[in-house]
Structure formats: C-alpha cells, structure tokens
Length: 154
Picture 1 (cartoon, rainbow, N blue to C red):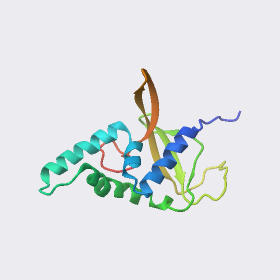
Picture 2 (tube, rainbow, N blue to C red):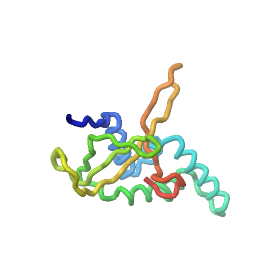
Picture 3 (cartoon, one colour):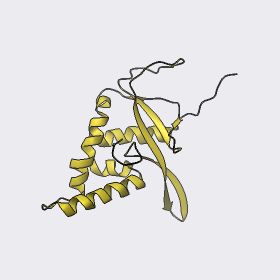
Picture 4 (tube, rainbow, N blue to C red):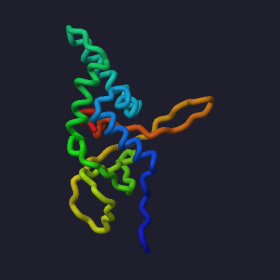
C-alpha cells in the first residue's frame, strides 16, 4: 500500500517565494508583512529594549532593516538569484507548524523517491488570523525564528 503524504498548498508556496522576494529586494514593508504576529511582537519587544539602551535615534524601520533583515538574508543567501525550488511534501515542526523545504538552483522538477542527502533551507509557516468584513479568516505567515528562544532567525 502506497503512503500518501500531505502536500503544500499553492498559498504556502506563494508565501514562501514572496517572503524570499521581499527579503532579497530589501522591501521592508513586504518583508514585515510576511512575518507572523508572534514574531512581530517579539521583534518589536527587542527593538524597544534596544532603543531604550541606545543614545542615538534609531527608528523601528531602521532596526528591521539593519538588525533583523540581514540575519534572514544571510541565512537564505544560498537561494538568492539561482531559481530556488520547494518540496511539495508538507512537513510539520514539533509544535505542529508547517515546515517547508526550499532547495537552491532547481532547474527542473525532480521526484525524489528514496532517502538522500540534499541541501535544504527549512522555512516554517504558521497560521495567523485576520478579521475582515465581520469574518475571521486564516492566513499563512513566516515564522521569523527557528527556535523557541527567539535566538536563531529563520
């Protein structure tokens, strides 16, 4: 009997590639809008702490652009300008969030049927909620941190 694996949705794929595009093009607003609410709150808290210790004026936008975005860009650098691909198989973190595997330099669709070692860039997505026109809906967002202690971007 063949095992059926969950597949990522087009929405998930679009969120992942939009995040990469916004990040690599330093589109601060688009990048920020891609991030989950829980991570936005954490980043804002870190900014408040940082700005209270600094003697120079440092805007929140500057903080994102100079302190947060470079860490993500460095982490995902291997996907810049080389036609990244994405695994169609949906995986989950221990917390139950969606885990996508991004691959560098994918020139054509590949079907990988047996275990093998590949360079992947994990990207975690989570569901945020929105309230629009009297309706609650969900939207996929990128988790900015890959650990529970908010120390490692991505």
